Picture 1 (spheres, rainbow, N blue to C red):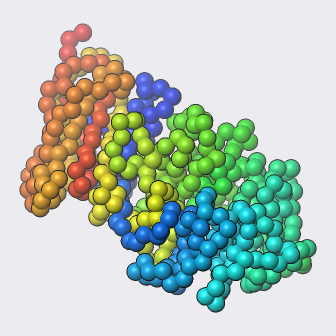
Picture 2 (picture 1 turned 180 degrees about the vertical axis):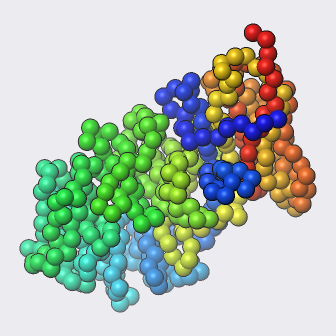
Picture 3 (picture 1 turned 60 degrees about the vertical axis):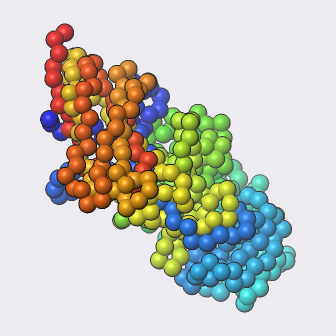
Length: 471
C-alpha cells in the first residue's frame, strides 16, 4: 500500500467531474513538523447544553463581567449558571437585534426602537436625536453609533452616554450613493457597511459628531446580509456584495478587504434564491479560529478556518437531503467559553471538542475524497486504508465499537455504491486497522467516508493498494 493524496480543499459545486470533495463536520489541520502526516482531519466540536431561555434567542452579548440576551420579546441579564438576573420586554418579538455595550450601559436596537440597560433597568431611548428603526449598533471611540435605515446616515450618542443623542450628531457615508445597512467597530475605527461599499471612519475629536472618513481605505465591497458579520482572529468576516453584485465572503484585516470564499463556494451561493438572511457566528476550537456562515433559506451552513483558509460544511442531525443547516445561530464569548444560541428555540450551548453530539442530535462526519486516477488508465484498488485514531469506543450505548463506512463511486462522484463497514475498535483497543477491500477496477475512483457514532474523529493519512489492469 502507498499513501495517496485523497484529501484536498475543494467543494463540490459546478461539476462533479472537476471535484466531488466534501468535508462535513470535519476540518483540516496543517502539521508543520510532518511527524506522521502533514495534514490531519479532526471532527468539529459538538454542542453541550448550558441553559435555556423561554423563547428563540435574537441577540447574544457577552461582556467582561456579564451576559445579556434578547429572547422573544424580552431582554435578559443572565447569571453564570444561566439564571435570569433581570428581564424586561421590548417592542418586537422576532428577527435578530443589534447589541453593543460601553463600561456601564448596554444598547439594544430592534428595527423599531432603541433600548438602554443601565443601573439594573431597561429604558426606551426617547432622545430626540436617536434614529428609531436602526437594526445594528456598535460602540467605538467612546460613542454608541447606529445607522438610519434607507439612508446614508449614521447617528452618534453623547460620549459614554447612550441616553442622549444630539440631533446634529450625524454624518453620511457619502463616498458612494448607496445606503448604509450596518455599522460595526474594528481596530478603534468605525466601519460603515453599505449596499455596495464599505467605509472606514476614525475619531478625530470633531463636533457635534467626532468621526471623519479615511478616504483611502474605502472598499467597493458592500454587505449582502446584515447579520453575516462576525469578529474572529483580529478580523471581521462578512457576506459581501462584490462590485458586480454577486455574493462572496470577505474578510476585513487592517484597512484591507479581501475575498476568502473559493470559486466553488461562490458558485453555490450564486445559486441560492436568498442570501440576505445569512447569519454568522464565530468561535475558537483547539487554536483554530472559525467563522460559520448559515443560509437559512438554502438550509446550508459553511465553516471557514481562519488558520488554514480552508472551508468545510457543518450540519446538525441527519437528513435525506444533500445537506441541512447547523443548529447554531448567534454566538458570543463569555466567562472563558464560546456560547452559541439555537436557531429554533431558547437553548444556549457551549462549543466543546469533547462533545460528540449537538445537544443529543447526531453529528454526521463525512469526507468525500479527491478523484483517484492513474494517468486515466484502468486500474484496480484491492485495499483502502485510513490511518485513524482507534480504540475510541464508548463504555456503553451507541459507539461501543464505533463503525465507519466507505462508499465508492466510479462515475466521477455522481453515484455511490453500497456502504462497506469497518470499525474503530472498543475503548482501549489501539491495534485496530480501518481497512476495506475489493473495490474492483475503474479509470477513476471517488470515496465517501461517513461516521455517525458519537466518538472522537481523527484521520492522519490514507493509503491505497493499487494494481494496474490491462487495457
